[in-house]
Image (tube, rainbow, N blue to C red; front, side, top):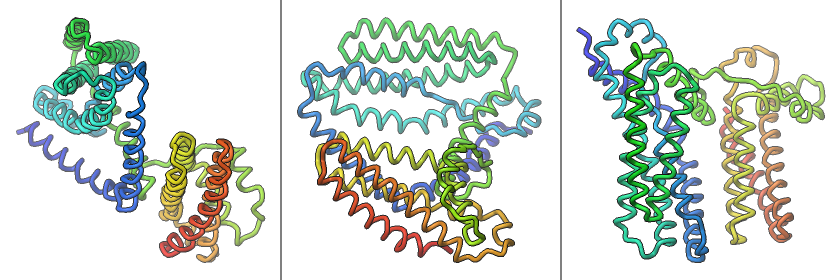
Length: 404
């Protein structure tokens, strides 16, 4: 006898066991400390900025947009897999409770978005509207929870619609309505917010009507949506450890490859120099991660006012880049050819160490040029000397010991 409730519990247990195995690598001690420091610095300067916030700052628009996006982003995690297309099809009429639990689980795992967004925007609200009571913002948070539940249910109903354009138009209209509702609510225009909330409710009721016109569940769409979300998670986890489920995607990037290997001699002992340079540019998310960290670090250098905080954050982003790029060493560990070729292990270590050092030096020079761009020549020399020293100690003192 098929019991959808038991089936969901088994599927959820398996899902949590798998994700927790990768989360312990993602949230390792080094990364947690670095992120705590980064968040603490941002919080400090955020509070300093709120003291001098302009009177005409568009607080209502910003909170409305962010609350609206958080409410609209309500994906449904069904935890379905490819074989379910065959084996669960005969039990479709018994899956009601399974999908009810899936909706509840989807809402629970998205609560952190509500909490983080509300906590981050709360100081901005009270700084911009000092005459408003905390009850008003609390009601905005309650409204955010309610509207998010509505959007989650609406997304589930629209997953019974196969037409992509129809789903896209529906989502776009709901996003606009959500943003405008929160905008008027934050501004104190409660009557307009109430009218638009009623319009949103009627719009979602229409989604329910559309879903009832469909013959049944679109199983392939549900499986594809869940597969895409798991693939995104695997890509993130792959930055920290090897993920067997992930099929590595490669991109050509001919000019970058040519630029990186142009000065590498065509010799046997330089084989790993070719390998790691091409891997970091074409394989996985190494290049994207490296560029993103450089850009975020650069923005911190430009916009954070305190000189020494600029320097500290520059070193922090050098550390994060180096720590993520360390996984290049394990990238080809499942490829047997590396052990079969007559190449020395010392050559391999030397290649990865040299390449990591070069990448960190490039990022250091980039940070230094940003200091020069904003007219801070003292920062240019400090970050160049400190960054090069840190890169050397990190690569030859920390990374070298972990190459086994």
